[in-house]
Image (cartoon, rainbow, N blue to C red):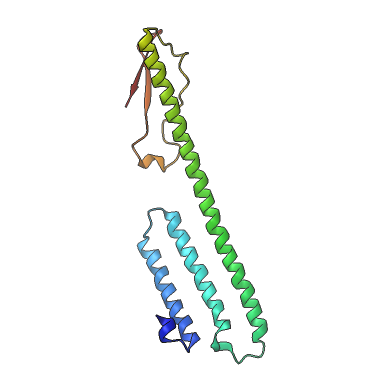
Length: 177
């Protein structure tokens, strides 16, 4: 809207963009709209990068158009704008890759637990069908962590928990909770 109403005064457009960015940053700091603190911090970082880029736009506006060394200042401002934009992109891409890596690792851990539980259920089923005793050595070692390996997993109660309790030394009962 400021572009349409103030199309002849670039300096006022930049000033309004500054106020808008500051208002968004204040909202992000006070309201913390995201559940994860990392996302709140990332959004504040993005707004700081936008503010820094907006400060560089002053050099390209009509505010400094009469300066003798305007060309040199515009070259320097353009290079630093590119540098801040690249830094912002690298930080955002790095965080996205880091989060993707950790989510994939958690998904593989869940898949491994499900596979091991399936093997235990299959072994128990065939043991009951054939009426042969299953010893603890016959079953695959299932390593169920005493606590979730990541704080993300503790929020979800949908894990498959297995408890292997032996009723005597030759047979093993398998229970799922």
